[in-house]
Amino acid sequence: MRIGFGLDRHRLVAGVRCILGGVEFPDCPVGPAGHSDGDAVCHAVADAILGAACLGDLGHHFPDTDPRYAGADSVALLARTAALARRGGWAVGNVDVTVMTEQPFLSPARAPMQANLARALGIEPDHVSIKATRGEEVGPEGRGEALTVHAVALLVAVEARDE
Image: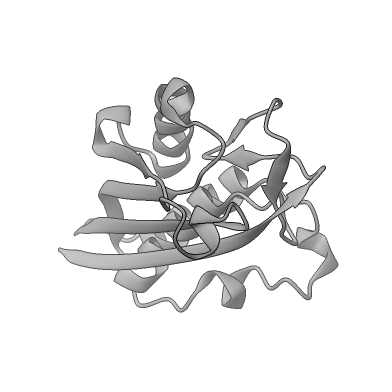
Protein backbone atom coordinates (compact mmCIF):
# COMPACT_ATOMS: atom_id res chain seq x y z
CA MET A 1 0.00 0.00 0.00
CA ARG A 2 0.99 3.60 -0.53
CA ILE A 3 -0.54 6.83 0.68
CA GLY A 4 -0.39 10.17 -1.12
CA PHE A 5 -1.43 13.70 -0.22
CA GLY A 6 -2.70 16.34 -2.62
CA LEU A 7 -3.43 20.03 -2.16
CA ASP A 8 -4.91 22.52 -4.59
CA ARG A 9 -5.91 26.15 -4.15
CA HIS A 10 -7.63 28.35 -6.70
CA ARG A 11 -8.58 32.01 -6.64
CA LEU A 12 -12.33 32.52 -6.83
CA VAL A 13 -13.34 34.87 -9.63
CA ALA A 14 -16.73 36.42 -10.40
CA GLY A 15 -18.33 35.12 -13.58
CA VAL A 16 -16.21 31.95 -13.80
CA ARG A 17 -18.07 28.61 -13.89
CA CYS A 18 -17.86 26.79 -10.57
CA ILE A 19 -17.11 23.10 -11.10
CA LEU A 20 -16.04 20.86 -8.21
CA GLY A 21 -15.82 17.09 -8.33
CA GLY A 22 -17.26 17.22 -11.83
CA VAL A 23 -20.44 18.95 -10.62
CA GLU A 24 -21.32 22.43 -11.85
CA PHE A 25 -22.79 24.88 -9.35
CA PRO A 26 -24.70 27.22 -11.71
CA ASP A 27 -26.00 29.51 -8.95
CA CYS A 28 -22.55 30.20 -7.51
CA PRO A 29 -21.47 33.75 -8.44
CA VAL A 30 -17.77 32.85 -8.35
CA GLY A 31 -15.70 30.00 -9.68
CA PRO A 32 -12.15 28.72 -9.39
CA ALA A 33 -9.78 30.32 -11.88
CA GLY A 34 -7.62 27.83 -13.71
CA HIS A 35 -6.11 26.75 -17.02
CA SER A 36 -8.38 23.69 -17.18
CA ASP A 37 -11.95 23.85 -15.85
CA GLY A 38 -10.48 24.79 -12.44
CA ASP A 39 -11.90 21.74 -10.64
CA ALA A 40 -9.69 21.84 -7.53
CA VAL A 41 -11.28 18.67 -6.12
CA CYS A 42 -10.11 16.59 -9.09
CA HIS A 43 -6.73 18.33 -9.08
CA ALA A 44 -6.06 17.58 -5.40
CA VAL A 45 -7.13 13.94 -5.78
CA ALA A 46 -4.96 13.54 -8.88
CA ASP A 47 -1.95 14.96 -7.06
CA ALA A 48 -2.56 12.60 -4.13
CA ILE A 49 -2.61 9.62 -6.52
CA LEU A 50 0.47 10.80 -8.39
CA GLY A 51 2.31 11.36 -5.11
CA ALA A 52 1.46 7.90 -3.79
CA ALA A 53 2.58 6.31 -7.07
CA CYS A 54 5.76 8.46 -7.12
CA LEU A 55 4.82 9.83 -10.54
CA GLY A 56 5.42 13.53 -10.00
CA ASP A 57 2.62 16.06 -9.92
CA LEU A 58 -0.33 17.19 -11.99
CA GLY A 59 1.60 20.03 -13.63
CA HIS A 60 4.20 17.56 -14.90
CA HIS A 61 1.61 15.40 -16.68
CA PHE A 62 -0.86 18.13 -17.69
CA PRO A 63 1.09 21.43 -17.79
CA ASP A 64 -0.82 24.70 -17.71
CA THR A 65 1.49 25.92 -20.47
CA ASP A 66 0.04 23.35 -22.90
CA PRO A 67 -2.93 24.70 -24.87
CA ARG A 68 -4.37 21.16 -25.13
CA TYR A 69 -5.42 21.45 -21.49
CA ALA A 70 -7.07 24.88 -21.73
CA GLY A 71 -10.59 24.38 -20.38
CA ALA A 72 -9.97 20.62 -20.01
CA ASP A 73 -12.45 18.43 -18.14
CA SER A 74 -10.68 17.67 -14.87
CA VAL A 75 -12.68 14.47 -14.30
CA ALA A 76 -11.17 13.15 -17.54
CA LEU A 77 -7.70 14.22 -16.38
CA LEU A 78 -8.34 12.40 -13.10
CA ALA A 79 -9.28 9.22 -14.99
CA ARG A 80 -6.05 9.52 -16.99
CA THR A 81 -4.14 9.93 -13.72
CA ALA A 82 -5.70 6.75 -12.29
CA ALA A 83 -4.71 4.94 -15.51
CA LEU A 84 -1.10 6.13 -15.08
CA ALA A 85 -1.08 4.67 -11.57
CA ARG A 86 -2.57 1.37 -12.84
CA ARG A 87 0.16 1.11 -15.47
CA GLY A 88 2.63 1.41 -12.62
CA GLY A 89 0.96 -1.42 -10.70
CA TRP A 90 -1.29 0.62 -8.39
CA ALA A 91 -5.06 0.92 -8.02
CA VAL A 92 -6.92 3.45 -5.93
CA GLY A 93 -8.32 1.92 -2.76
CA ASN A 94 -10.05 5.03 -1.44
CA VAL A 95 -9.78 8.80 -1.36
CA ASP A 96 -10.61 11.31 1.35
CA VAL A 97 -11.22 14.94 0.34
CA THR A 98 -11.74 18.10 2.38
CA VAL A 99 -12.91 21.26 0.61
CA MET A 100 -12.43 24.59 2.40
CA THR A 101 -14.65 27.31 0.94
CA GLU A 102 -17.35 29.78 1.85
CA GLN A 103 -19.21 29.01 -1.36
CA PRO A 104 -20.62 27.01 -2.98
CA PHE A 105 -22.51 24.99 -0.39
CA LEU A 106 -21.41 21.41 -1.16
CA SER A 107 -23.84 19.27 0.80
CA PRO A 108 -26.51 18.89 -1.92
CA ALA A 109 -23.85 17.91 -4.48
CA ARG A 110 -21.86 15.47 -2.32
CA ALA A 111 -23.37 12.26 -3.79
CA PRO A 112 -22.94 13.30 -7.45
CA MET A 113 -19.38 14.42 -6.70
CA GLN A 114 -18.63 11.04 -5.10
CA ALA A 115 -20.13 9.23 -8.09
CA ASN A 116 -18.06 11.27 -10.58
CA LEU A 117 -14.80 10.69 -8.72
CA ALA A 118 -15.55 6.99 -8.19
CA ARG A 119 -16.28 6.48 -11.88
CA ALA A 120 -13.03 8.23 -12.88
CA LEU A 121 -11.00 6.22 -10.36
CA GLY A 122 -12.61 2.83 -10.99
CA ILE A 123 -13.84 2.44 -7.40
CA GLU A 124 -17.19 2.40 -5.62
CA PRO A 125 -18.72 5.71 -4.47
CA ASP A 126 -18.54 4.55 -0.85
CA HIS A 127 -14.73 4.60 -1.23
CA VAL A 128 -14.84 8.37 -1.85
CA SER A 129 -15.21 10.68 1.13
CA ILE A 130 -15.96 14.36 0.50
CA LYS A 131 -16.11 16.75 3.42
CA ALA A 132 -16.56 20.51 3.52
CA THR A 133 -15.45 23.16 5.96
CA ARG A 134 -15.46 26.94 6.01
CA GLY A 135 -12.70 29.43 6.59
CA GLU A 136 -14.71 31.22 9.30
CA GLU A 137 -13.51 34.66 8.10
CA VAL A 138 -9.85 33.59 8.35
CA GLY A 139 -7.44 33.51 5.40
CA PRO A 140 -8.31 33.69 1.71
CA GLU A 141 -10.94 30.96 2.07
CA GLY A 142 -12.68 32.76 4.92
CA ARG A 143 -12.68 36.03 2.98
CA GLY A 144 -14.17 34.27 -0.07
CA GLU A 145 -11.07 34.93 -2.20
CA ALA A 146 -10.06 31.31 -2.75
CA LEU A 147 -10.96 27.71 -2.14
CA THR A 148 -8.54 25.04 -0.99
CA VAL A 149 -8.85 21.28 -1.31
CA HIS A 150 -6.87 18.67 0.63
CA ALA A 151 -6.95 15.05 -0.53
CA VAL A 152 -5.47 11.76 0.61
CA ALA A 153 -5.39 8.67 -1.59
CA LEU A 154 -4.64 5.09 -0.64
CA LEU A 155 -3.18 2.98 -3.44
CA VAL A 156 -3.05 -0.79 -3.39
CA ALA A 157 -0.73 -2.96 -5.45
CA VAL A 158 -2.19 -4.64 -8.53
CA GLU A 159 -0.69 -6.29 -11.55
CA ALA A 160 0.56 -3.58 -13.89
CA ARG A 161 -1.18 -3.47 -17.24
CA ASP A 162 -0.98 -1.55 -20.48
CA GLU A 163 -3.82 0.87 -21.24
